[in-house]
Image 1: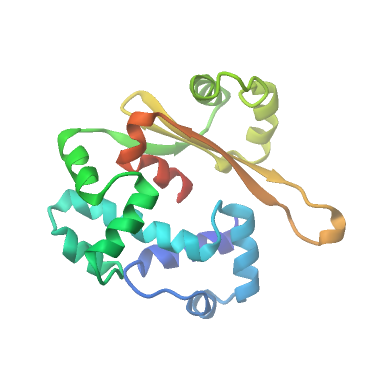
Image 2 (image 1 turned 180 degrees about the horizontal axis):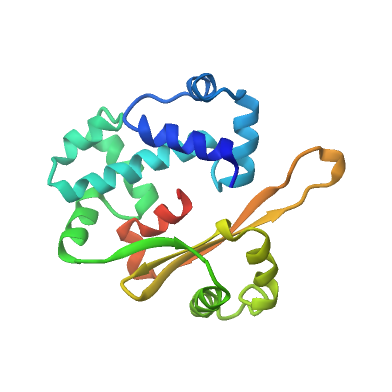
Length: 208
């Protein structure tokens, strides 16, 4: 994973409740704005400003565990009205903030995200992927994914609830023609069990 990308993500996480600009990030970490744009084109499924918007909502969702009032959470993450927060939240998580909070309080889960570290783990993730995309044999083929695992294992992520896989985000670096003068970009192939969409775990995979 790019050191520049890691520094940008760390800055965003540290200043998540602030009004973050790309210019401020560039000045702080010592890279140009254009370089940051290029790095996010390679390593993130989202442009950097969309990444920041989604990351704020993901952090806001996590604060709902604390019992903090939704109105105050919305203000902390830059939303001046509950309506604006509601609309943005639902566009990402597929449910209202209240529905999300109720779901989290009812369901005691042990969810976590990890990189694929072995061929055996890759096989388990692909078996899960077959249940999401049963019609796409090539997509879930280990012959296709093993070379990508050997080249870029940090781009292969999955989520588990206890011992059960519930979502995955598998990235591929697509090379660009030499004439472009760039290093390629990441295509994300993903899937999630329908019942886990309102938990935020899938969004967390894409924002990792």
